[in-house]
Image (cartoon, rainbow over all chains, first blue to last red):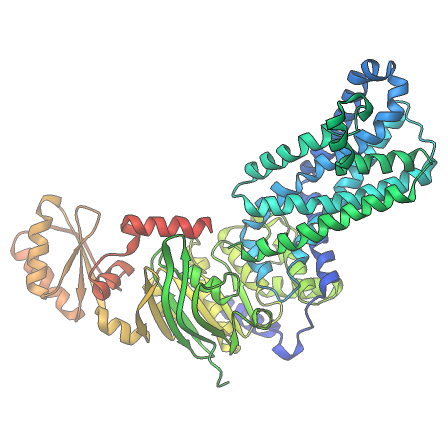
Length: 276
Length: 329
């Protein structure tokens, strides 16, 4: 053994913490926030992953407004007021889908074995990842509303209405993310997670009141559109932004959120704990 | 310290129809290093994952530091640390960020976690790489950081899954030194390895695992007594005459001769190393030219041949399947 090796062993021995001096492990909230911090560090180190929350929202907003504006509402100006809140919701919930593949890739790595061997509240690993995603959602939402403003969107509800709507949508996005989490835990590859998520998301966003007034649809479809959670969210968001927020609409969205978390949260944990 | 570190009875884990771990009984006392030796796909990683409460056993009993893996996983997690086969680190983050992350989860404040992390990085000679992403680390650096991550608070029991696989010999020696240091500090270590030499160098006791079963258990000395102390490896100059050489070696040493996949190479287990010279002389007498020869420790293949009468499972197809399933899981 060389002298340096001995030195190193000496140093290692001197930095070991005796078992009775260890702190109590982080609690549920603190652990969730720590995993959220990890998600932020990942954004810092791989800023490319923000491409989907920056370029995609701009593309969606500009494309849909100019393509459908003239045909549906007669003019782009008139359509912007109706469409922006809808696009705001659609883009955000499409971005939540990335949660699934990202998590799928993440938990297949060795570091999750270590996380799972730590004495912390296990759901924190998932909650933290979803909390980190909130930053992505805030960025995407801000960009959509900014582009909308440039295109002539002037919500009657003012700043208060827009911020309340934004917060409500963040809560809904967080709740919806648990669905993608369950899917990502059930399938083997991230491509499969994306495929299934897309399959669920496409009908939900198009069979809704995002692009057109449901009154133009056949009556059997109207029924489906009305109970579609996406429509419920869009209605509440439109009202809030227009300054005519309804307590009942907001409550309904929160009920949907509670159901999503109540069902898919425990399911996520069930599959997560059994994932080998 | 009377509680055993690990106690298992009939531990079983199946993946589909393959039993990755097929009824393993272990009794591991606290203190020292316990080595689990076996080829790829033998079930070492699966066994460790069950003991580290990452995987639920399908049958059997297991107690870690006196706590049941089924009913008290949380208590076990407070006392163990796991260093997985593929670095248990977040490759996108820097070295210090990895340690801070673990430190905060283990209950340190942000500032404490940072200073603890820097102290550990310094002790492991990684200070200069503190702000570099782990994906840019060499294999040896990763291993050291990985082990540092297990020492933020001292575990009573540390699992090291193939700690030296895929790193260069110099880093391997460093890791060995670190492991010995930790044991001197009072931690019990369970390590898996594919190399008899590693188990021999480090472990106080060894279990040999093959296709999910423990086929031998004992001190390295006991094990080697079963296997033979060493091995004579010979490469003949003319591959066509290998059979002839094998026959001469077998007759002179009165033991089995292993034909390596290299068409010129032969390996003979030696009960008594001093007889190697007479075997080489016998080859010379038959005018069999030997290109190289070496005396060494028996390889894992030879250990298996001695213990089971067959070669390691990774040469057979169902070994590959078990392997693939273990990786998929």
